[in-house]
Length: 317
Image (spheres, rainbow, N blue to C red):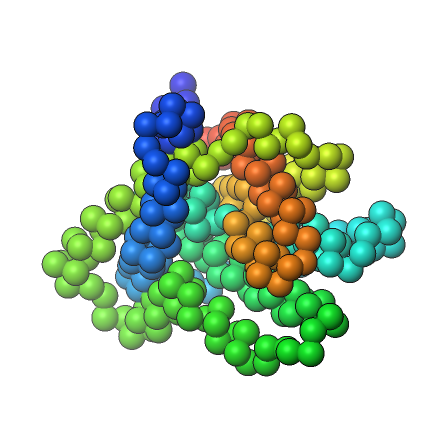
């Protein structure tokens, strides 16, 4: 009953967004506006606030980076090799498939979920998981740039690619938060209150937008490959992260956060980059849609399992 009380509001907000979309109460542009509001206003404020108020040494959780980032790196290599040499996929398709199975939507899904259940203590690991995803997406961008360069004489310099990634609102605010955390100054009460107010709005806006963009009909259009990638993303990846967290002796709360961060749907940036470079955008889009829908069930199951393994951690808020 305790777990239901914790997670029910999360999925209720997602369901509310879906109902409003299904009933066509709001315009089609609503989702785009909400996502832009979250990405350009709410998320940067939350990232900067959560990181900036922490002591710098608290951000250097090596076990978390090993369990989450290390597992994602190993799984990425395994998927790339499997897609290329076992399934015989072309380089572009194999690249999209591999990254779609590891790049999590930590900013718009994991962060609101963990913040709702655990408060600021649960949001911080999600922020650091977002750093890992940023590195993943940077590697993804470089890979697509290389693939696109084979069919085009114009190639974007790697330095410019890195700079463009670093300038995105979420990444830039995270880096600024790290720098501010290093000063140890903390925030005045008025500034803290302002940023706290914005952080409280994030969960409702992001989760509602997720529900609003969900289309159950999309999953019916997917084939075995998409379903296989969805299983890798929602079942295999979080399972391996949970095992790795246990092996490195990670704290229960950070173990839960790492597992949840791995268990959320594929990041939408995978599709945006695939579309930008014209490298298998449909494969990316269908994987994102399928993982978004299926995660409603799988994420609940992971939370139930994690609650069974670490019951006291769910009482931290």
